Length: 261
Image (cartoon, rainbow, N blue to C red; front, side, top):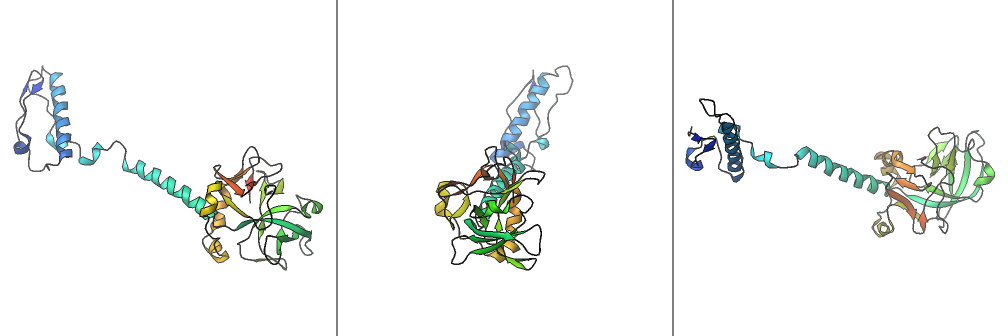
């Protein structure tokens, strides 16, 4: 190994290319790391003049090439993954077919005390039949003619003998003692698309996913826990992306900081 000459805390310049052991590469990063080690050795020697042997850091402890990066790879990956997850959730949410609806009429389910049956116009040729477990929370007269928000691309479900073809989206408090349907913005009409984001996102909205894909990929299950109303009652995804139509935002009349389902 090449000798290091130390005198009064200083060291003579070494011919780096010819005196390094063969285990070293000659990449610029490696040479830079070795140079730092030599400077460290010189400082150590300066503070230990009383010793009969100079304290010299061995060349083989030079920092590896990848140590020069100021940001660790795991940190970079974590930040990148957060961005990807954020975008994926918004994209998934906008594959849900959420529309403005209007309840034409509603009645008590004949076979289930907790269910209402609603006939809902969502801009299609025929109204949808939807069952909702709102008997405990909303009086029947308040549903008649009400503007609502409907998740439309769910597979039909048999609800005690009635085929339910969609779901009314509602806000509820943490104890689930208070529940009320979400309200579309004034000026919305049945069939208007509801999406998450800004006005500029309307032009890039994808076509809604088929109902079987929504079920298979568990899209609603992925999005629903991230839906809330804020302190003003405005509906949002991840407290960041507004739930909106082309004329305004979706809200809850009375429930603030509430869950949406």
